[in-house]
Length: 100
Ligand SMILES: [Zn+2]
Image (cartoon, rainbow, N blue to C red):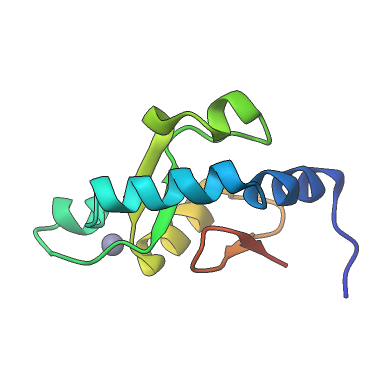
């Protein structure tokens, strides 16, 4: 078991809120398909809710419904690994929660 960084702890608290669970379900209901796959002409059910603009633990961005996007798991992983160049790659579980 590794020690969580202060940033990871802050994320953890946000992902555990009832509000996030509601927002996540509402987002998947509104946009049930992965938008990245759609851009490639593929139809894939989304199961992950991503933040368009990195929230970096900021509740205003984190809980902004307009900042959410639906992705499938594989697009989400690829997307995040590209964004998080340098440093350690954060992996995400199916619920969008960072796995460490
Ligand atoms: Zn996809």
